[in-house]
Image (cartoon, rainbow, N blue to C red):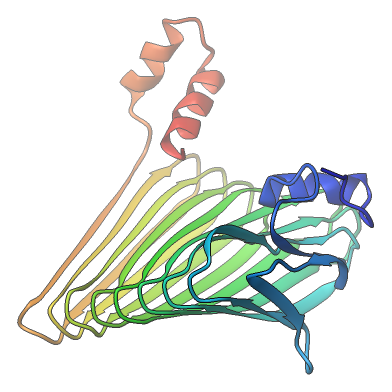
Length: 311
């Protein structure tokens, strides 16, 4: 496959980090660089169209599409750039697809760089979607790297969606909001992995409405907060029918960091089964000692534990 055109070496590194792109991907894709379209390719079953008004795209996936993927990464390498994009995904009935998004910001200047986005998903009956969204920041400039993603999900009968949301490095401030409405038999799984350090701030808010009979949701967050960073995890699940809902926050706190976990579960039906779990704690001393006996330094032992925890 050919190399991706219209991107420089810094932008290519961002694409590798947020979308695992080393070359032109198979299937449909839309690559946005510094607020403008860099490259776009449609497939026979997946169409990407720019919105007539405002910044953003519509992604339309035909009913019955199977074993296809679409990549829509965004990268910013221009210090001081601020943008807001609106992307809508229409996934047809009985489709089975992978959607890879993500945003990477390289800021080597003194002005803040900011990417905000609203992604709306309309998942058809019996459709199956895996959605991967990664955030990454780099650059030694004084300007901050800011990302505020909003996600709205509407799931029709017996649909399935798995969401993987990852932010491991370099993002100074992020406020993530995710809202989902599930119809009968729909199933949603959300997995968040988050690492903050320095004076970074990260807030993740999830609201899931289990509206249909036998709908279910599982919201899982694993995070590590280091140094002076702050994290807030908010999970709200509303059981409005016979359903099953579970949220879980498992966090490691280090140095002078701060972590808050705010659960809210509401049963509006006698057959709603809802559970919330939260655990925040430091790395156990015996874990570090055990690894140090194998020849690792204390810093290397901590890194091994953190990396294993966030896998």
